[in-house]
Length: 123
View 1: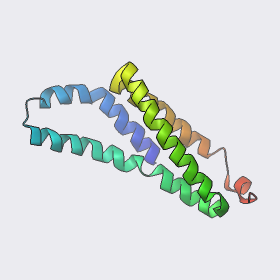
View 2 (view 1 turned 180 degrees about the vertical axis):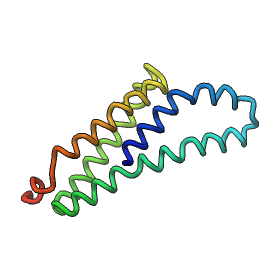
View 3 (view 1 turned 180 degrees about the horizontal axis):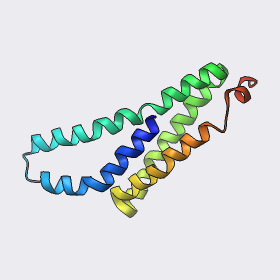
């Protein structure tokens, strides 16, 4: 559900954000900061859900893999930040969001590939 909400918000931002920003450009700085925070907050909230939800699934299936989950998350965070910067330099915000619209659902689809029963026997 979180991935669906992330994709929906990201798609809405791609479609509507340019016109919203054009309309809001004349606002005072404090108002623009408030609008920016209100636009970022919902997406940030839902982007924070997949890892804890996945971690709880790992904890239930194979508690010994929790350190690996943290390590993979840390590595992906570093690589993702660098990749987002490079994509933004080449294709802007639209390119970064478009890549996220592809990768988040792809990650959600892989969740079904690794059922709990397969993980349960791991150390």
